[in-house]
Amino acid sequence: MRSHPVVLVLVLALATTLASTACRRGSDPAPAVEMAHAQPVVNVAPTEERLLKRANERWSRIVAKDWSAAYEYSTADERASLPLERFLERMQYHEYSTPRVESVVAVEGDEAYTRALVTWKPVGNCKMHVLGDSDPLSDCEPSLEIEMLESWRRVDGEWFYVRAQRPDEFFEEHLDLRRPR
Image 1 (cartoon, rainbow, N blue to C red):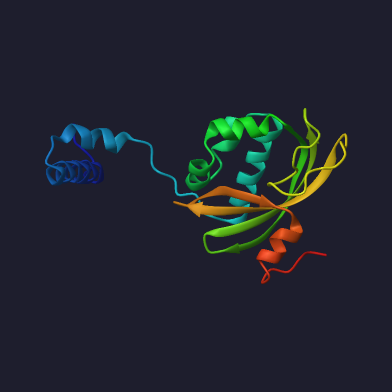
Image 2: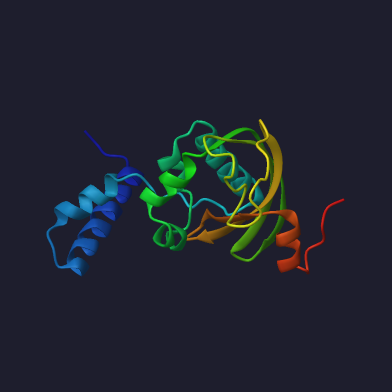
């Protein structure tokens, strides 16, 4: 039986590449063969579409009260400053529904900002805060629609949640961005 010349060239090129990789690593060729069959790493483009997808995925986890999964969307710095146990403790007083990530406000390098509207309802103590540690609710509304601007950071090609702010706080801090009308 006679081999096709193109197939023979491809087989020889693959074998040479695998042998070369194994020699550079100072190991036997077995790990290189395993690597040749590994799934390719897909580099996700850091587009606005990807950011919106991540923001919506995070909100889906929050609405489902899958707090641990929502927590994983936070940057490593945010997770280090707020351990999972504290995050879970805080979130037990909140219920969210009908989230709408309305738009990407801006993308500035590895920093980005989204605008979201969500219905929030306090669970338990009516004196809980809407966002952050300021302005506690004075009366217990059955639910409120709140607007927030969320900060996101791109790390290793993927978007991670940093924090949410009320529009006034956000635009005070980001004077260069125009407030939507």
